[in-house]
Image 1: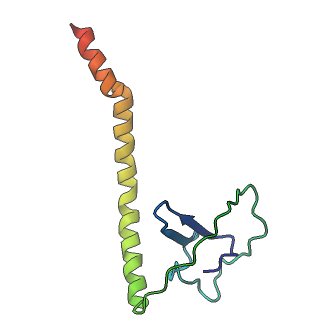
Image 2: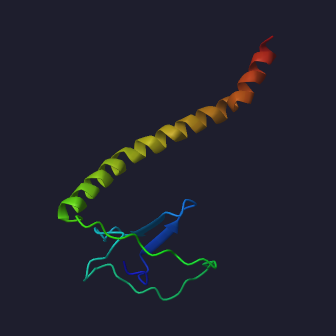
Image 3: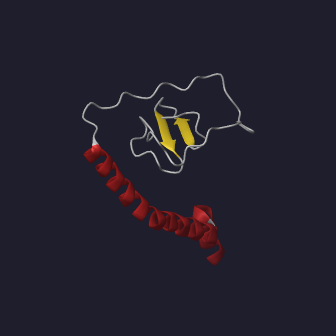
Length: 117
């Protein structure tokens, strides 16, 4: 992938795994490469307010030998499934948080039991 593009993102997790992606989702073969003539390519001019550490981003993993158009389609389908369910999961988590905040959580329930007596 073109790391000098302003839409390129990379995140290294504690496990050492590195996620590389295009933030505008125009790299169907991510994390290995961007399209040759990507319509979203814009050279990054400056890294404003970025804190650069002393670690170097590890190189990307090797592209699987059998990675092809069918693989890209399968990954797109999986992404569509995740994207379709994500809003309902976020709503459910928010409802649980609201419910816990309204009752004061476990501590609030305990306090309520002792007040009734």
